[in-house]
Amino acid sequence: MAFNNEQFKEIMAEFTIDSERLQEIAASFRQDLQLGLRDVSLSSMRMLKSYVGLPSGNEKGEYIALDFGGTNVRVSKIRLDGNGKYEILKRVGRPLIVPGKYDYICKDATAEQMFDFIAGLIDEAIDGDRETKYYLGHTFSFPSTQTDLNNARLIIWTKEFATQGVEGEVANDLLLAALKRRGANNVEPVAVLNDTVAVLLSAAYKTPDIYIGSIYATGHNTCYLEPSIHDPNCFGSGGMILNLECGNFMKLMPNRFDKEYDEGSEKPGEQRFEKMVSGRYMGELLGMAIAELLGEKGKKYGLTSIDMSNIVLDESPNLFKASDILMAKIGRELDVEDVKKVRELVKAIIIRSARLAAASFVAIVWQRAGSGKIVKQHVAVDGSVYEKMPLAKENIVKAMGELLGDDADKVDTILDNGGSGLGAAIAAAMAVEK
Ligand code: GLC
Image (cartoon, rainbow, N blue to C red; front, top):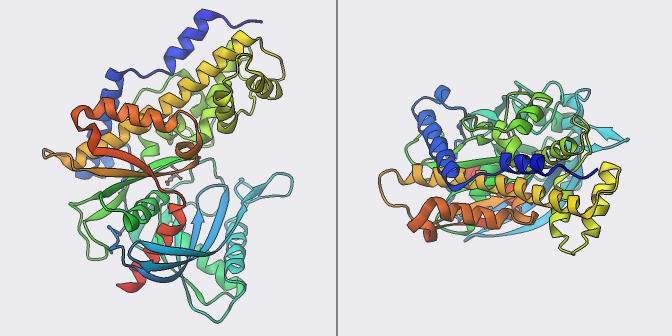
């Protein structure tokens, strides 16, 4: 059965954001930001305090960095040498889920199981050493209310995590209890931070002119340095970094696929922006659109963002590779014209995602500039979608250019690879050195 052309065009239109709409989205994001600065309950974003500003770049010492925010947990031992220099002395990592073996992120898993697993990994990173005193920075990449740099209480799981007994709890209390159960009393968590904040710290440690940090991966979220917030408990300089939790931004128009996906998701009504932008969801949206084109509405094919990358990368005239991927996932052979259409759809979904991310970056740049001039700056971004997904980065650049006009040359995006780990070590150093 060949796709219906009209239906295909209509679906493509659903995933297209023209320049005018892009301006509206950026303006509405900025407005939501302004509302939140006045009174956070007025914004759809959580705009969470991090109790940290910019590092000096001269932080020094050896720290343990825990990076917990996706299915892979990583622990590193990092030595900061100051002057923006550092060395990763050891790195270990393991997934929280291995299908058929264990799963610490499902509803049946408990907080204790999850944190015992993480404590085990920390122990591996320090080679079971019980003598040396280790300070630990914890990148905990879920929306959490902070009362200081070391105390973050999980508000709600995102990214389809469902482990019981963690929502409403203080992440580092759970971690500390697990370290104690293991006898690793010499490891002391001293800082907890969102991954976006970690990326901003990490990038700012190495490079000047960075005020915005973002993750564009399984999840999507951005933070920025807000100069107007001062707090005696805040470390670092320049004000306080706010973790926007903009994955929860709501003041935009989801299409019918976005709505349908959201309704069937782990947390309906939450993270509407993230469900349109991040890698965790793009493959699902694509699958829903293909199911509609094939008259199999409701069927799930398990398409992922990696499949999408591979489909785009197949530039051969017969699209053999793309056809094979689709055959394996959809369970039937599509004729080449339809494979071409799927490829167009994949591109449209990626481009939409990139344009939405760009709109949020520019909104923050505008907000920071206020009525003054936009300063020269880089937006630091980490994450597999930004780094590896074809079309993502170039469409962020293009969309930022459309939005910024004459100021386009003042703002660019830079990759900060591994910032989640390095940022945790920097935060720990800032906490310990003060
Ligand atoms: C989700 C989390 C957020 C995190 C982002 C990227 O949006 O809620 O805290 O920064 O994923 O990992």
